[in-house]
Image 1 (cartoon, helix red, strand yellow):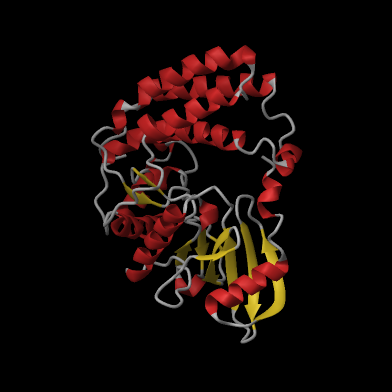
Image 2 (image 1 turned 180 degrees about the vertical axis):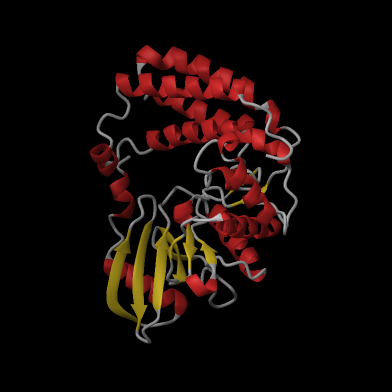
Length: 329
């Protein structure tokens, strides 16, 4: 499938008309595309000079129910006065709209700069924010969203890759065996672990600092049901054992609002390899996209798979040899 065709009918005129119909406001002719590879995101301006962000979801990526669960999670955060940008509600509280083949939502525009973690207090602040989000996330389930459990999500990603025909024949057998070894090593530690709604892609680019108004978290598009520690490790500058101070400061802020299971710090390296496998599967779905091929011309060649297999083997060894991380870091 050529992913460019997903949006071939999404013209500026359709975007403006769709937003006007959805929120009942007249738009000016201003429409500026914003960086987003998966979805299409635009900044618009209403006649009253209000700036808005319209997000058009890529057709076929999420179901209607999965998108609604994203919106429900954001709204639960907003109801708890957690600084997350909630979609505009119109009519009877509707946040999800449709224009032709496209589902979309409209957000108020919020200014902010990327959050830079410069001192101890910054780690405590971000820990407190994530702790509050997880309190909201623990209140209900998201039954249609990905469950970040290797027995489910990683197993499915490996199966998809092996059945795709994209793995070089020279490495297909090795990858298959390695994938099974990875599953055998990481499934058991996730048993009896708390799974709640989490952001899922909580890196620094998804946190804005609004100066006097504090931190705000954005882009819940990849929300999952998973272990809370997933929203910690992507923020760290290195592996947990090399970031003891940062981890402790984060947890100091986090535990002002929610108890954290220290034993789950041992899941960080398994989660890292799971993310690597997920990314390979995600790239495999983009191989016919002209823009993907332009930016990753060597994806899928023999040398590519040799390196990926090597990286996965090295990460598996890290997992097998990792020190105990429970208790005080």
